[in-house]
Image (cartoon, rainbow, N blue to C red; front, side, top):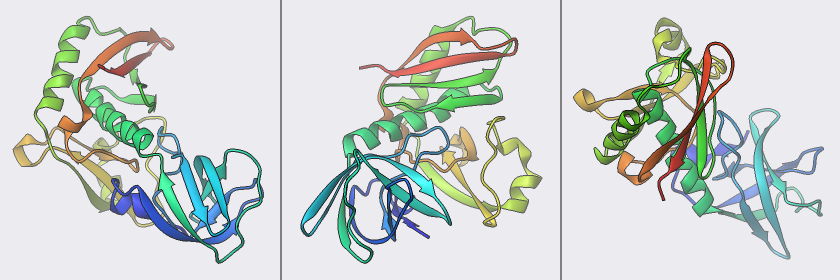
Length: 239
């Protein structure tokens, strides 16, 4: 399996890894990586890798078989052989924007406390789909509440619970369309705030900023009707 260094430190932008496999689609599998694979509505990381006598632009990162992670080249090319040491260099600016936006979507689910039926994280615009029969009447108030949570500079931390604990606490799951991955015996939770200042706690495997003030200003975008019971709410960086 691939050691997921982005879980240990979401701010790690470089590391050395060893090639342990090639996928049938032309991807490169390493023993350890800082590159986050597509999942949970968050796009896979991009960047580049270097090795003695070669280099590769990484277009995206995906999950592969047997708990492995594959780096996908921007175009087909000869890959470094098994056992090669490679230097991984993340497109940090892009990743950081995704971290900020993913954390912002957690805050959006706080100010709109309804079940989430879908979502997607983007660099400048993201969305959550809510089980919401009618569109919000006062977007300005929601936007103010959202930015107040950002300005409170709340800590963003992680906890782990067992699969059984998640089953016993189904209210932790806000997303209706995608259930948290199970089977490994434990589930990762993202907590926003602490003790009396806690505002959110839910299962999530994505990368997040350390404090909400790092998100920056936010702006609510349009609200689209996506069925009788669903409304899609867009979120933008206010810059």
